[in-house]
Each structure stands twice: as C-alpha cells, then as structure tokens.
Image (cartoon, rainbow, N blue to C red; front, top):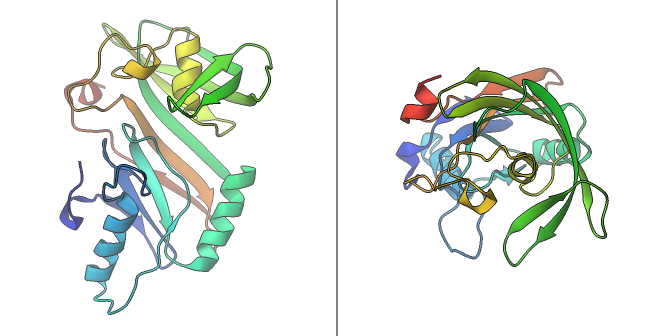
Length: 227
C-alpha cells in the first residue's frame, strides 16, 4: 500500500489534472477505516513538488475499489473538477477500459446486461437477469485478449457506472476475477488485491477541450507480467 508521497506513480499531470496509477490497497477518498486516502497523499505530493505554502486544492473525480489497481484522475482546479464531474456523471466524452484476469475460458466476446441491487451492509452488489425493485441497469462489453493455462485476460468497456459493476456482472456469468473472494473466486490473493485493473481512461480535457488518453501499466506480479 502507498504510505508516502515518494511511492505514488504519477502517469499524467498538467495545470488542471493529475493522474496516478493506483495500487491495490489504496483508498481513493477517506472512509470509515480512517486510513490515509490517495487524495491526501497526492495533495502532499503537489504541496512538496511546487513548494506551496498554503492548502492545496485537489478534487476527487471518480473512484476505484480498494483492491483494484489502475488509472485514477484528480482535478487540480475547481473549474476542472466541475467540468469533469459533469462528464463522468452523464457519461459524455468519457471511456473507461479495464483489464481483468478471470477463471476459466469465457467466450471470445460478449455484451453483458444485468440489473444490479446493492447491499450496503455487505458492501456488495448482486446482478439480476431481469429488472427487480431498486435495481439499476448495468451494461458492459468485453473481449478476450489472451487465454492462459488457468485464466483468461479480458478487456472490458463500461457502458454504465455502477457499484462493483464489473465484479458483479462477471461473477454472474461464471467469470470470477482472480482473488475476488467476495464475488466467488476460489481463493484470495496474498496481498488482498484482485486482478482487476483500470487500464485506460479516455476523456475530453476539461479546459483544453481535446481528447486525453491515459494508460496505466499493470502491477508487477507474476500473472500480470505473463501477458
């Protein structure tokens, strides 16, 4: 887990936004655990880098689950935050691509449509084939990039953004993400991670009005590196 500003992996930065490659175990924003969130660590990084005497502004635009890795962007100005929040909320000019290592050998490509209900006590979502009370429609597409001995590498494009959407939808069709014990994996990973990685984020720059594509390297573990 990231413990200090020397360990964060900055993969993009300009005057308006900063993107980091989140490691498993980091929380993006503060929660009931009381652990130092990535947002505060990035603020400390910026304060030191630019020798800022006062408070550093940093806005949280989106989140990744704690055991997930990959691209996370933050806004460095209030203008950028407002515009990015609007884009992410209505899914305009934002493309999210994930990689996942899943058990077994799923079909080469598919579109998954489910209706998700959320159990806040268990911090878990359940995927239903048909609409049920208090459910939200969830849609993703995937294609298989690589077939390994025991796992398949899937590239996933999110068409909606729901709580634990990828984890719940893949589990519903028997594609359990490696290490994701909560959603049916056979065993957990030793470091508490799951093999779900926010690989690419493509979005309209909130100020420059040009498309930006940010790609995050996969973690340095044996299975990821085997691809």
